[in-house]
Length: 453
Image (cartoon, rainbow, N blue to C red; front, top):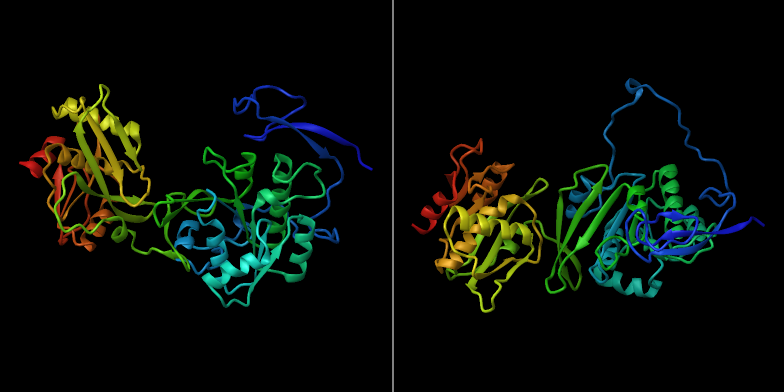
């Protein structure tokens, strides 16, 4: 019998200590150090027969390494493929995080049912009958998806050896446990060890693995921070419960861009891909309303047109309120200070509320000009004429600064029927003879005179 010993781990960041301390020296959090039993014994391979790995490695010169394009697995989901960078890379480990009930299990089960490859869906949270009920609602006919309810990694690998799937889905990593660690499932040691076993399996067999991860109340993935460093891709599935739209973001991706965005619509039959999000993010109001402006933004390589609403009213209390939904509140305060200092608008004694419709959050600085236009429109109670959109950043001196990929923004606005777009005079525009009027401006005063006279 191997000797057992205890160790102390931080539940927030996973740092290890020889004894208990009140504050973690790594993440500076208090009362997060807990004691866990660690079993020190020789670890076997992920394979049940402990056979040696078939993959051997030797040093190669850079000229000897072939740069053939990696063949990716088509997930049969355009939004999922876009966020991953073109599909699922064989042998990769993907971590999907999100709030409870947001649709993580529905998304992965939907992908597993649509795939033409043999897929093993392992659930440690639901029974096979519960998964069957959801599968009948999403995609009733699938002959390539196998459902397994198991939490012990050694048993999971035995079933993997018999099924030999092309893709493995684990729901969720916090429910798994291994015999090599004696601590409870969901602890720092168990999450780290189970993930290490799955990584070894994925790399040795070239089989992709998708993990579902729970999140904490702060919105970060539960478990040690090293979990995000171990995997190849970290995806975040987010959305507002009051809206039907869900957003899939890439926080880390070794095989693609981290700026891509996927949008889904939650329906009774599962998640529907939204191929043209600009049409659903812009409300179809027939009447002209003040305080509304359209911004042309870009997420990765995908242009989007979003609607920004602002409300400016007299402050009822002594201190004016500043509230922003889907937009950085500190940047809103900065833009209001620029308006007051550079353009002469007295907004210090007024409440300002800002909202990006559709329940999405945008951090693209190119929507600054649209935010100012919406605020000025609400303040003067004058609606912005239809067919006008904005794509420019605002500097502290009140200048209108250029933004990247302005040609994509202009083409997207033209495709949706807009007839005028405000951009910076410093932008280099390569488009010729477009059907939309490009209004070049250099200062806030130029925008105000063009919009409100």
